[in-house]
Image 1: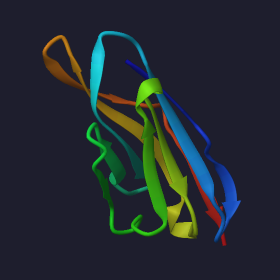
Image 2: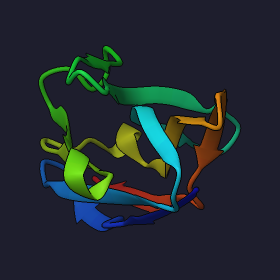
Image 3: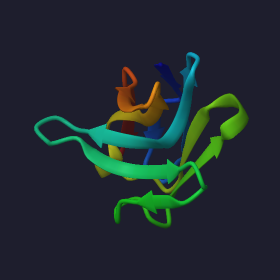
Image 4: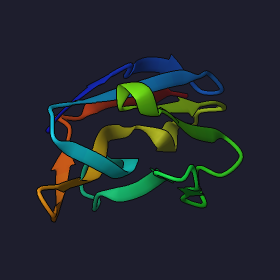
Length: 118
């Protein structure tokens, strides 16, 4: 499974960005897809996750501002980020938990930089 992310960039505080992550490969089924972020000197943290049944979970910092969605047919997950704040600045990583040949496996994308200026 390969994950390819896009959509990061530089935006002013209060602005919006939309991240995309596409999972490619064959023979797997997706259990969850999610977004994590990591800023310098900090641990990687969950931002939002969407389960195969459509259930979503958000970090408190993301609730009300970010929306995670998924195009199941294309194995693509999106993160719509509104009302961005400087503290949202981080590298955002896509993650997926898949079922492959009877085993659960986890994959990470390469990361995409999001920078929010004040």
